[in-house]
Every structure is written in structure tokens, then in C-alpha cells.
Image 1 (cartoon, helix red, strand yellow):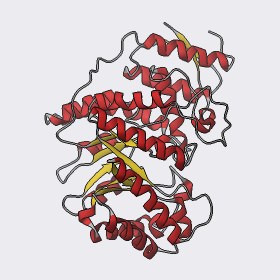
Image 2 (cartoon, one colour):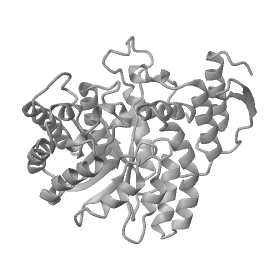
Image 3 (spheres, helix red, strand yellow):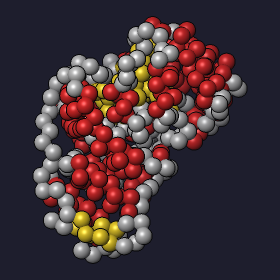
Image 4 (cartoon, helix red, strand yellow):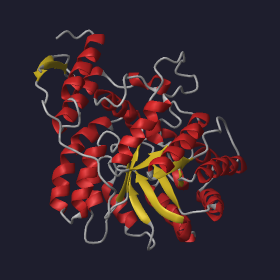
Length: 384
């Protein structure tokens, strides 16, 4: 079962994989936390497309992966950054993904929330056009029966002159939402085009604008998803939220401590890393449901090294590692991504991701994972 893996120095070393996976079984939802996994899409490997073409999606495999997440009690955050919104998946593809996944969720009783953005805008736009784009997507998500997640907008970041424009646009949208939504603050480490969101490059000033939006419409905000990779800033922010407004951590570096919480509160979760960690994350939250914080941390803390590896700079390419691990785990038959994003990480990066995931017992069939890793190594010229 040994395999030779490359490191960043160009040397090969021998690694001995696990022979048995971690024993994890499907289960019901959770009582102490609301947990969403932001799920990836599976590309159609036989489509004759280029990286600039509209995404060609394998719908059967994509929906099967969502059923996998639901079977473990996780909610699915659909058509989000993890699904390559704006990085391979355009609005037409996202709209079809939302319709199909929402219908699948109804069929199996799974929880789903879907991203609402403005990515049908591909050039400069006015605030009126930004509002209209948001409204079009919000209508589709609400018609599908899914909860809406108001995502950060590249077009709004480009068009806004200051905090007052964010207050106006978000206020306009929240007043017309049929049900409470999740607001998403995605930091520039995930998308450089979002630098200065909420009208300021100063995060303290941006936080005040963000809180002003929530305070003006607390009955329309179910919660906020914070993806700034700054644990203390998230803690400070969640302590200032109005009663009844949840904080969903999107911090893929510090999620165990944020979900566990402290004497003043805790974060729920909406995380891209819970795509590859799904069954293990679900087991950890079920332990937390019993009040066993120590047991929760013992299960989830060891996963942070893998998450920090996948989300290392440039963070926006974490999707490559997520899909790579889904292939090794047998959730899809190939390692191909929409937009050709399988090329966005190096062979040493893949080797380390494989080693860390294997060490956690994430692969249901360790031999399959090893054989697929050997195939990838062979394509790069590594002989065993």
C-alpha cells in the first residue's frame, strides 16, 4: 500500500496510507447548530469545451453529491463560491443548478439555501442595474422554495461610491424578501474584486455599515455568513448582532473554536471545507449536540491542518483541492473541473492534500484513493 509522494523540494518520499477509513455513518440533522456545507459542482468530462466556455455540468454526479451531504444531516449551501460562481460557473449555469438542487432537496427532505448575486452583469453597471440583477436572482431562488443567501457583488463593489450605496441597495432588497435571508460578507482573500466591500477598505468602518444594514431590517435577516479568516473579528461581530440573528462562520481556518463558542455565544456554520469533511463534520456536531465540547474539538481540531492547506493563498483556488478530494473519495469518476480549474494547484499541493485527508480517514476506500493518486502522479511523470 506504499506510495511515493513529491514534496516542494522536488524529492520523493515513501508514504504508507491507512488501510481502513474512519467509521462514519449517515444520520439525522443537528439540535445545537445549523450547519451548511457549500458544495462543489462536478464537471462533465466528455463535453467539448474550453475554460472560457459556459460550464458543462454532470448533473447526475452533482446531485448525487448533494444527496450524500443531506444523508449526513448537513444542509447544502448551493451556487456559492465553492460551486465556482464567477470562476467557471456563470449565472445561467448557477440558475440551472439552483433549480435542480432545490427540486432534489424537496424530494429528499434536505435543507438548502442558495446564493443570490449579480453575476449576470459582466461589465460596468449602475446601481439600478445592480439592484435589478439581484432582484432577478432573488426571485428565482424564492420561486424554487430555497432560502436566499445575499452574496457579495463584484458589480456593487465597482459601482458603489461609499457606504450609503450599500445601505440603499441592501435595504431595497431586504424590504422585498419574502423570508429572512442570510447576508454574506466574503473577504478579498476569496475574491480580490471585493476589496473595500461595504464602502471601506477599513474593516472596522465596513463592519459598522454591515451592522447598520442588519439593524435596519432584523426581521429580514436570518443570519450572517462571515468569510474574513479572522476569528476575533467574527467573535466581536457576532456579539453585536441583534437577538435572533445568527452568525454562520465561513472561517475555514478557525471553525472548530468558532462553532464551539464561548460563554457569550457561538457560531453556526456555512463552510466550503465541510464539502470534503461532510461526514466527519456531521459526526463532530452530533457529539456537540450532547454537550460534549471536548469530544467535538477532538474530532474537528485535527482537520484544521488540511483546511488551512486547501485554503492557502491564493485562497480562491481552494475549490481545486475540494474537487480533487471528492475524486479520490469516489464521489466522482474524474478530476476535471469547470473552467479548467484542476490546473490551479501544484503536484506537491495535491500530494500533501492526499496525505492529510488520508491521515484523517476521509476516504471511504483507501485503496481506491491510493490508486487514483498514483494515476495522477504518473501523469506528472512520477514513477512508483
